[in-house]
Amino acid sequence: MPMTVDADLLRSLLARAAESDDLDYKSTWDPGERSDLVELCKDIAAMESLSNGGYVVVGCDDRGNPSGTFSVTDSSKFDEQRIRSRVVSVLGEPIDLSCALHRFGDHDFFVLGVGPNRDGMRIMPKDGEYPGKTVWREGDVFVRRGTSSIRWNQHEARGIVERIVAARKEDWRRDVLETIRVATPVYEADGYVNINVEMPAETFAPAVTELMRRQDEIGLDLLIRKTITGAIEIVEGLEPESDRSAVAAELSDQLERLDIIATLSARYVPATFSHVLEGFQRIYDAIDKQTDIDYATFFPQGQREVLTHAYAIGAALVAEKRWPELAALLRLAPVKVLDSFWPSLLRKAEVRIARANLLQDENGARIGLIEASKPVTARLFRLLGESQEGDLTNLLVEVDVYRGIATSSSTKLGAYPNFSLYYSPRGESAFRRVLDDPSARAALFEGTDEELATIYAYMDAAAQREAFSFNGWDGFDDAQLRAFVEEHSSG
Image (cartoon, rainbow, N blue to C red; front, top):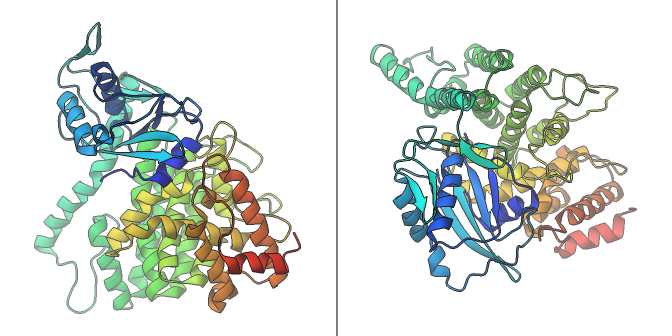
């Protein structure tokens, strides 16, 4: 699947202000220089071993600021097909590579997205050399260790194998299902639907729909229970030496099935939706093993999966304007609380992830949640047969805005403004919706106009502060929103 390399994604990568295993900054790069090409290919090969791939950004220093040393006079040299051909000449096929050239103000930036290798790793097909240096030999395998691209060791090899196994489980499910189909139809003509959590995800959605069409309450209840139990067993099977990325990938696969049930139940059997949300609480509780005052996180990758899958469900609910279900999701409380310190499960997960440096830069500002949620959301829409992929950014930005409105008070913000990374028009439709749509307002906010306007003012100010360094949210452009805040806000 091609990696996103649009301007919004670039802004979020620059806003990290620090390199990581899935992000490499380069002050400059010349596609015509053999040394630059070989060194880049080493980083690309290392990022191919990551379960979600990674990115290389050219044109910035090691804090994400413009380097001032990268200036493009001939943009054709950075055409995606040309760059791809050069990389393939060194690494060979297959390779998942996307790239784009962007200009912000007076500065050029070039971003490359590297997808995970279908085999889990890149085995170098030939020596990588340029005059005066041999960077690798044929047969070498590179991985990312921190911010460096280095040859793998035994521990890293084991982690890659575990991720390969997790990724291949879907293929195995398809093979098993095809075998079962020969002897047992999935849908009996009158009654029982042969469905289980081991079905491939592509078959799972229509089978769940069929359960709901037949109003098979017992079958649906059993399926939900099995799906929740399966996710909890994955978490409880985590060992200290387990590869966290591989376990997170397996957990994501199980949560994907719960996403499908949640979205379809909101659409067809709303009474069942609360049962699914209780399942998210139980799964999160299994992940969140430490106490509320303990900053150490047992499985932060798992917390990230719960949060991004919740945003994916939120995007589907926004697309269908299912406001009561969206409000219930956004206000979902964790099982473990300390004097109501964590009124929102999503807030607690976000803080845990931030403390584990999975969604925050070195200055402590959380970033990237919307971009992190895009792959999960895109897959959910594909599995549901929906054609919303082109609007994913807007949908997820709206989820984030609704979350802020639904969980804030006139004295305290209830969510970090992840929407601040994006231009104001992307999120203004959500602010307007709560003003103009009585059903949305009734579900998402119960206070007065004065209280709502105060929250709007707080969210707008917080977003502008966060967006200052990366040209994102620049305040309300919409005249109605500005007038509403000026007339009613007490902040």
